[in-house]
Image 1 (cartoon, rainbow over the protein chains, first blue to last red):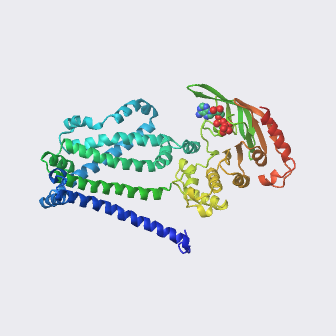
Image 2 (cartoon, chains in turn purple, red):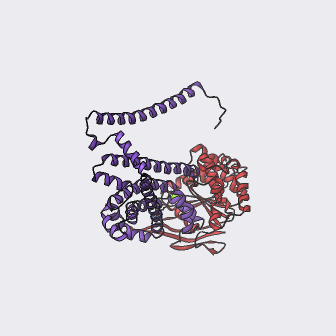
Image 3 (tube, each protein chain N blue to C red):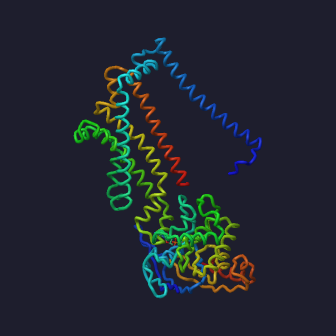
Length: 270
Length: 251
Ligand SMILES: Nc1ncnc2c1ncn2[C@@H]1O[C@H](COP(=O)(O)OP(=O)(O)OP(=O)(O)O)[C@@H](O)[C@H]1O
Ligand SMILES: [Mg+2]
């Protein structure tokens, strides 16, 4: 609270310690990665492993450079990213709307419960071929797979959050004569903001699963396509390069959601 | 004048019917402070829900000035056991929630709410969030939220039971003084005999479930103020305490 307050030597030591641990942590994280890359590279150079099958960092790097030179890397990234974002957004919106509807009509929720349970347990990817027939072998099918993979979990998580809203708070609002929509807007929704954020976090991960699987099934471009293609023609360097890019993209998106979470929670005040 | 006329209530569950309240009749005068004491599970909260229009009686009726209550009524406001302040709203936002349910709060509403908060020592905390307040302050904020809708009748369901003993005594004192100044009719549900006697004009003792009124005590203490703290020191206090204690004991 008080910035000018003098820091005691004991507290200073404590703070220094935190900083030191933080530095140590970073150092180890970077060293581990470097050690792994160097060992991998070395193992390839010394023929401990077969670089043709196991690839190696220098070859991955060359493969990446090639993609950039050809000018296709941007396209593949754009295709996969846009499919992911569209699938993610659609699944979240549809899931939220469905969860609200289930909360609004408890009888519908009771009726649909077994269907949701089965849909949730079903590996959605099994429906991939049907979706390709319906949506055509293109980005539409990929987005459909993504939505399907993501939406059921979203509905179930959000709906469970909604019905677990503190009865006491609902009762309080009802005592003031609140209508059902007021109860939803003034208690259920705000109380579920943390829930919604955690749903977003889960969805972003699932959306990536959906898109990559979708691209495995049907695609002419995208990182999933590159991975499958690379595997088929035994270009393991290309596969590794694509996975590397995928790692970067997923991390980036995950941290974007975490950042969103931090801002919202600051406003929300838990 | 609030009247309960031969009110009865049954809960229905798949396991069967639970007769919570057998028959209760009560007249509560305007400005009166009434306490309801009874064993756990005897139907005290149920009785408050019936008065507040949250439940409809299975038998009999509840009226205010001869008008039957059929649903939540703007003349009645309920203060729950736990404060139920919304953590995502500021204290002012919490206090305005009751008005928001009825209409868009006007500048005048905000001004009044702020005035109430200032009057009762929460002026500095208007823009703070509930987690920045102590338990006693939160309970006071919950009371002001109840007062903000300008009800005639306050329903207090064990409003201090979540507080530790020390805080409980001071908060009960504050709440009683605030209610005195705001001139409200109040019905307090409590487990605590001393709390009931020290705060009320009248104490009603309920029987075990299905509940009926076992007895009624008009509390007349030779204390100089309505402060529950002062009233606890009145010479007659122990006499009421013992009688109600025995009353609860024999069931
Ligand atoms: N929603 C409900 N459905 C079924 N039975 C209920 C319900 N609410 C309360 N009851 C039953 O009705 C009886 C009275 O409940 P109530 O909550 O009014 O008691 P209480 O006197 O307020 O108890 P406590 O002192 O523990 O708060 C209890 O036996 C309880 O089991
Ligand atoms: Mg109760």
